[in-house]
Length: 172
Image (cartoon, rainbow, N blue to C red):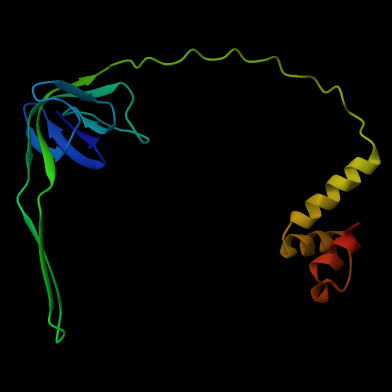
């Protein structure tokens, strides 16, 4: 059984009893930590892919120790200028051991709000002036191509040379 887990912004393929190095975690040495951000789980016979996470799956791990990785040399040079800079960097990392991959874990969710009863159509007839204003706003937010197709449907001629404002006036 294996899982693909996102730990501190990176994805790792993990199995039970596996040791791996991840970016520094804010957990004391010897403490246990669980990761809920599981992207995929394979159980040998079936696999589950999350959208984006698989629900009900959790990976438990134990923090073994905090340390620094190998030194990375950063060397900068500009030719024919006499410019050379040499820097080093050691990334802070944490060694963890995967203790278990748990499936069927239920997350605590907030209770769902009761749906309010839907309002019936009380306002059927609206004044014509308000609908005309809404229509003019809708026309101004539409693209020129959409306005031209509406003008074709209404049988307006000479639309190929019209600008957006002229199309809106013709459609009113």
